[in-house]
Image (cartoon, rainbow, N blue to C red; front, side):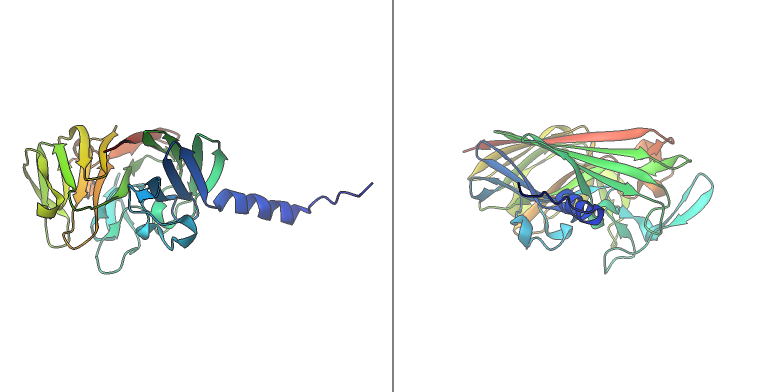
Length: 301
């Protein structure tokens, strides 16, 4: 009989750590979803067969979450003005995390390694445990749940306040859609936030929806009054994006081969507004959890 050599504790820990951060894929029908937990809990790619639906990279080639198909926005969306804020009578600051802007962007989850805590043929669950630091002064645990079926991709994001004080919280996702020759967007909205030169919102103006070819759009704005699914159509796919979150950030750079339609929980920089809660920011009590979901339905044309 051959002796079985059990791995030592360090080896076992290394194996578990590798499994928790290795690329992971879900498959359902012709859809394929690739995830990089170690790169900001990001989605590396979403494909129908060989055709990308979101801007996609094979997971082993992905270098950062900023180049991914989608990354999480946690514990706030978009810009936190001038990397400082006052909360419940105390002043706090955050670090610069993107070059070329005076603000901190997109929270910290997209720049931290997550780990896979469970997976199956139908779902994968990622977790990030954050201790208070210079990027965010409150402890929290965040989880992402990704699921795939033959006609849709679903995501759920949760944040639990692990601090001993109430903390301000925002959630969202930053997906990058592929721009094609006949890409078109239809979204029912009520208002758009105009912004200053640094992209902080300054005033709310009426915006009765978006219904246009992407070639004619040049937005980098937060919108509110979102009703019904955002409909995106091109020569390959008809997509419908729905979410529990009430705001959208829409980014349509004319010179790029992608565009972004981002479900978010609050207006950009809401923490600096006179009534943050009125603009979607959540005051989360110790031990409480805030969660959100989004779903992308995919039909092939």
